[in-house]
Amino acid sequence: MDGYDNTWALKQIEEGHYNILSRAPKTAAEKPGPSKKGKTLPRVITLGGDHTITLPLLRSINRAYGPVSVIHFDSHLDTWRPKVFGGSPSEVASINHGTYFYHAASEGLLANDTNIHAGIRTTLSGPSDYENDGYCGFQIVEAREIDRIGAEGIIKKIVERVGTKNPVYLSLDIDTLDPAFAPATGTPETGGWSTRELRTILRGLEDVNLIGADIVEVAVSLYSIYDEW
Image 1: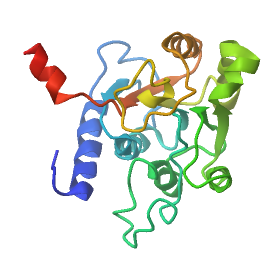
Image 2: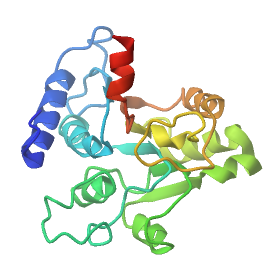
Image 3: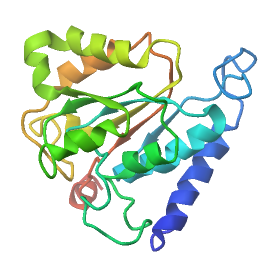
């Protein structure tokens, strides 16, 4: 991936992902699937890194499946309009780890009104974030709702939103977890779910038609790597 040209780097991620996605899967290659060509494709899990990578991944997914439903685990909405997130006059520069879902919605990569955020507990600019989020077709499940409805209630909301037949992409920001469990992330927010709660919720999504996923915003200290060496 190019480290100096963000536009080209995003294109490289998209093409690299699509190259893998276009291959025959190890199993069930002959079975019909939900892709545009009616085939079963590999289910690719991508590890990051900056959450911006979800945009080129969804572009790749769109080429193979068309618009998909998204389950987004995060402490932040990530649908902020570019003018809210810095006000850069450059459309390219406005693509970052807080605006990529805004661009995904604008590009028609998301299935209408079947997308959901889970674990949300903070905003960037106040209540207007929630108003802007509506334009992108997401429903919001806040982290604190688990105290009232439990993990089973969270699971029910997610499944009812995305359904069990639609192709669904899952994007998991590690800061969904409380920093007591995952401190190595760029934007830690208190009041998150425990590792056990998140595992329970993920396991509860077994009936969802997941066609791909990413796990992002994990920061690894070089010092810890050197220590291991």
